[in-house]
Length: 423
Image (cartoon, rainbow, N blue to C red; front, side, top):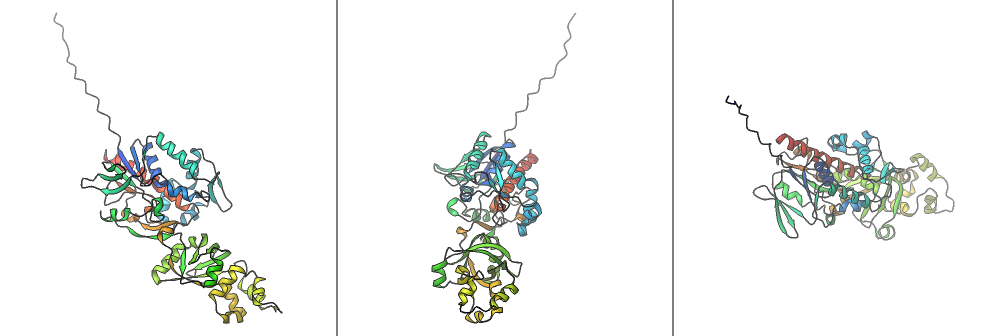
């Protein structure tokens, strides 16, 4: 009997596995490194390029006086610190807020604590151990880190142009994250050189301006400049544009004023100067006394004491007394009610911000309106932006770093989402 055989269908070859997407991250600060970590966790092949000889240079400098990584403030107040970009930054913080950032730091083996002001610091107050642990984790995840590698834009085919010590390199990628920083501290890599590269591609960029910066006066007297430059004024309160005074401290400089209280108000001061060519702020030299209390104390007979001794007894001496003499006229010292008003609302005219390269951070950059919900440039598909190069600003106190981390994470997730949609 002849055997009957049933033909079997030929075995189908197994489809070749898809190659991991190739993603370049331009910029090795907190935003860029966070994007790289997210991308590596999503199985992307990631390369980070930074123009500086080492990564995270501005991050390390920020930690020299104590690494203020974030703030323990309640979330609504925290988000409000981002002022006119609170809605956009608030969305980024929904997935990665201050608590999430602290947990992420703890996972690196770095403990944190909350200071008396609500600011959050690593226990050792240093940035370097955190950065070392982070870079080690990135390398273990397969992220390739390149230094002395400056991005020069794109060539005609869309390849990234990277200038290295060995010459220019062309790199084809599936997506790119730009995290190039703002325009302050050029020597640390945040030089704003990326602005014309994007503008040539039709990307709108709001002009970079100093933020968290000092300001200049028209000119101090030689006496005040020579004797009190570098002197702190504290406690003191400053009011801008008729808003409620804010208390803190600032420092007299040879050309004007700087310090934490001035930095906190720098956006409002800068915008007033932009609009009117100058900004008049009002100093409350004795914020713990009311005007009525001062006027009553000033009217008391001073006997043989000089006016200087009389004012010193109220706390107006040293740099406070010098400011009061500098910014009022002789007639004011003859009228105790007028003098009380001057002490509580001493007008100081500021004429310009200090140069951008001296600022702690910068305002301006790529507007959120030019990006989609994944932080991808609408005019350049596959190119995402994160960090300080976006058009937002915030005061010091951990708010700047928190938003940089959060935006880097969002950009990394945005890349993975966009790549998945294209598969």
